[in-house]
Length: 326
Ligand code: AMP
Ligand code: MG
Image 1 (cartoon, helix red, strand yellow):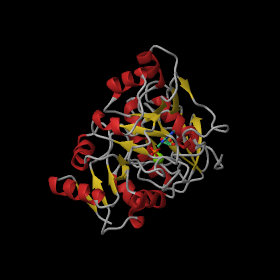
Image 2 (tube, helix red, strand yellow):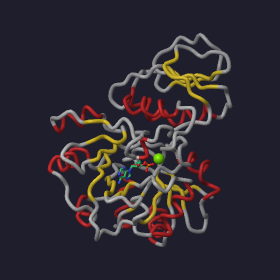
Image 3 (spheres, rainbow, N blue to C red):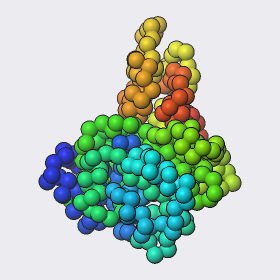
């Protein structure tokens, strides 16, 4: 499987590949997505197979302009409209009531009567979506439950052997500039509920709407968003969080200025202590540390402000030892 750089020619080939039922990995501002036509049953099936994604985990529909939403959703509550105005294009996914005449494959929606939608904020993605001009599903381009890809090489490593070089493509748009998935908000009822923390901090959403937005904590009763499945986003190596320094058998993932008191393999999410930089580096550095096959990766305490909220959410999920299937 080859990685294609971004050129007019390669974007045209990628658009044609998707229109012909192929699967294309492309960059977004959050993480790399594995794109396919939202109406194509066969392509959707392949995306689930390639990712080994459980069938009950629905996919996010990506569109390039707000206009496209009319043919997909029944209605948009006023408060949700406010969110689209403020955060689209951007790392915000809205779960909305699905219009039965819509052309989004039922399997892509996991047979739910809702649909998750976003407009990504990356010029390459938007150009590609515009060329196709149809809704595209694009889950993260990694194996289910593993670390999301923030570079094209991550996609190649995870999925290269599972993609078809004659039909599919991997586009290289450089490193994703946010590095963490979108915030998923259920806006199907009177009050919004955050189903997955992500690129937009929950308090920013609360401030925008002038209400305290709820964050769905447990999915034991109702699995609203399997991205909230407890174990997710995880390296193969066990994680130890809020660590002060590594102990025997561990490698180290630091944050902020550190005086090195140890002699183990280490990475630093942001020497400057910049939380946005830490988000960009998170998955990539965890992947690198994972290669060392250490007993554990010890991770420094990460501040919970801004995108730190989502970083800590991912680290917590990655640290769970046994997969919990609800
Ligand atoms: P990913 O595609 O891997 O970034 O994950 C997409 C996230 O959106 C997952 O957490 C899904 O469970 C969630 N999602 C997609 N569609 C829906 C939906 N209709 N209702 C609730 N959550 C959804
Ligand atoms: Mg994912």
